[in-house]
Length: 385
Image: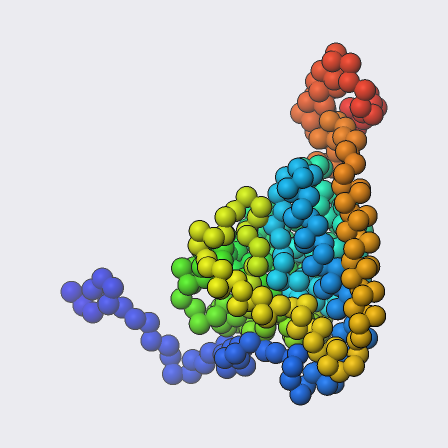
């Protein structure tokens, strides 16, 4: 038996002229997460942008606490809180142009709200009403994605299609650390890099995929290091430093828009609340760990920066908190109103033109509702559409 015939012994040797397709060195992330707040570099930041981000962070924190309260009141079926991760959510929303697209996961309702979506519409899916709750095309926000990482290939497809059409559009796709263990993550990054699609991947590494710590998911030095295997740059950033996240994402968006391809950004942050209201986080992490991350709170970090530079005073803080309370009161009032649901809406927006099977099913449901004396606003006209 020759060497080549021995099982497992063959190792292909590249020819002498072989060279790597890409120099991997520029693609590698820094050894430590990039930070801005509290550094000398922060002095050059735009004060107006910082104040705008602060207002969004304060409202975002209040939005999270109000949505969590709504689950306890039975007004939401479930709520995956992003408390502690508001810097990632706000930066992702503010870095995009109106023409760009945001592809959120189920935990990213705050990013959608920061982009301009009505908070009630953002929570509609989690309430159990409708399919999405808003018009994705109107807001350039894709449907909230509950299956892990399936929004990533969608983002790549949209970004690639936009480039083929000549549209100046960038897609920003958000995913958690747990989502990087899914096949969709691999497929999306591989296609994005091969096609040089104008897409940015933002991984919010919040420490746990439900109860599974990152160390049990991957042996990589960081999730940002995974980028080099696909031929794209990886960036590592402090996910609680909203200015740093905004700058890193901004550079990635500009790079994508210029035709230089995708970027993978890992934002190191922490999920202060449980995975959802149905989770008991005390089973897999300690209070000491949580309190250590509270000391690195994204709202407090930016507030200290602004007050220390005399860009924000007590009156400014009070105004932002009052605005947040007004938002929460409006959300609470509207969520306490029972929605008027029409069972016939089950058949809306399934296909552009209804199939024979859908028309048959709609007619059956209409007949059952009529027999039961249902008074919802569905009509015979809607049955045949």
